[in-house]
Image: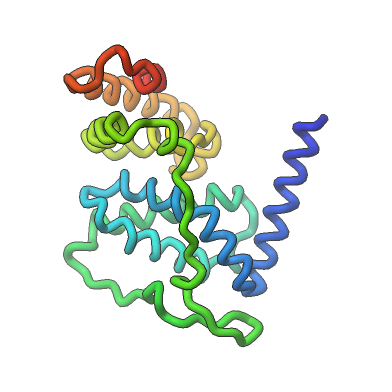
Amino acid sequence: MSDLASAIGIRAEEQSLIEELKSGSETAFALLIAQYSHPIYSLIARSLRDPSDAADVTQDVFIKVFRNISSFHGDSSLRTWIYRIALHEASNQRRWWGRHKRQELTIDAPLDNDEGETFCLADALATCDASPYDCAASAQVREHVEAALATLPEVFREVVVLREIEGFGYEEIAEILNVNIGTVKSRLTRGRAALREALIKDASIRPTKPAILKAVA
């Protein structure tokens, strides 16, 4: 019963946040960025060939969220919707960023909310502490894991990151990627196997690092 009450409380809190976002609340948008900026940045950095582009793409994600929140109807969770936008923007960057200059609103551009107040996204962007993943793994091991992740094909890397690092469930991943759960499980199995092989081949990752290998076993 306590778990059910907690779930209901989370949904009510999210719905309240969504309503405030739709009303143009600067405070609500600042809270959204504070909550999601770090994990979205990490997800995008792991999705791009050049992680240095992650900051720009992350900014684009929150601009898209700001512009399109009025069209969000709750068919999925807000978190799922934001991650779907993030992966879509990362995909766009991989395909077209080098050949097309996008006339996009920058993070420093002023925006007006429904109350006539002006603010910019850069002012709302909060600095977040390290994620649980970053705190749990040593810098050296994390470096090797990130390098191994980069060798995975995109379809496998996305699922592994969403499941093992971001902690999404199978149904949530299926919603984000717009595929069925069977496909998610198949990609995750193959992605884990590929990641494990890459880590074992790395002479710096020994059996004395069981936590990483256990996650992809």
